[in-house]
Amino acid sequence: MSKPLAGARLSDRQRLSWLRLIRTQNVGPASFRDLINRFGSAEVALEMLPELMISGGAIRVARIPSIAEAEAELEAARRADARFVGIGEPDYPALLKNMDHPPPLLAVKGEGAVFRLPAVAIVGARNASLAGIKMARMLATDLGRDGYAIISGLARGIDTSAHQGSLSTGTIGVLAGGLDLPYPPENAGLCDEIVERGGAIISEMPFGWQPRAQDFPRRNRLVAGAAVGLVVVEAAQRSGSLISARLAGEMGRLVFAVPGSPLDPRAAGTNGLLKDGATLVTEAADIHRAIAPLTGLRAPELPPFEDPPDFSATPPPGENDRARVTEALGPTPVAIDEIIRHTGLHPAQVFMVLLELDLAGRLERHAGGNVSLVFAEG
Image (tube, rainbow, N blue to C red):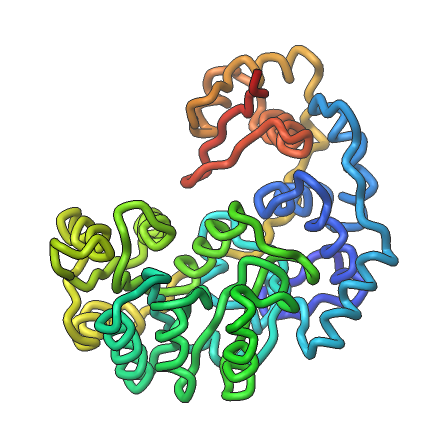
């Protein structure tokens, strides 16, 4: 079987190939899915990558991780009592499957049962006030008693308090780096306690990966995507928590905010969210009342991968076709349907050109399936 059916488990061979494919430079969640849909398996996709990258205009072909390197990462996961979970498998967080471009593989440490609870994200300032810390812990404790898992990013301040308040009822920590490199380092003990008490730690990054500044928005995306709603307790005007709130809103998640003093800069972001329509929160009941009606409904699950489209009646794109698609793109995101209408090409040809551009590092994916061209600076 080349692709897992929903609820089925990957074979060891599939898991190895999936890991090699997603660890290849310029292969992100969207291009991974396109490659599997086009070629039917990660193994075949790996063979086709060099040709696709060259067709997309890559100056040099990106290096593909070797089988030995992928096996070493799988072994690192086993030594850490962790595992890699694929998007079609039972232990994959349910809500993540329905966000834009979900990660095809997640490194997971802990119990998969916590993913079956409806989750609420609680995020906020690292330099939180004592009142904010107390509020985050209280919300997490009360929501945990109501049957919710609490998800956050394991940062100092509000995140740490939210995890601590829900240790006994189920909490999920999302790391910006590898599972073996908790950040900040002082929360390594908290990570262990989360796992020991029935929660889980997850990451889409490789083992041994030291988190960089650009990795934290990716982590925030997972925090927002895995939750029914997201609560911001304290946040300055320009902060990662507001990025999480924006991402949650784009994904159709409920956004909540705890009001604060106009004199405290740590409340400027939360008060701004309230002005923009976020639900005001002073107690856990405010969140529960809004979310409870949603948790009784099961969101329609998209299949993790579609059947490969039939390309037999459609010729592969030629150089003129590639030029037409590239000319239709610019720095402003556009819908793929618009590109198809504008170029008059068959949808399969357009999708193939976009995949080639993506693998060559020349395409940027945006929310809602929109795309734009990456222009080199200078």
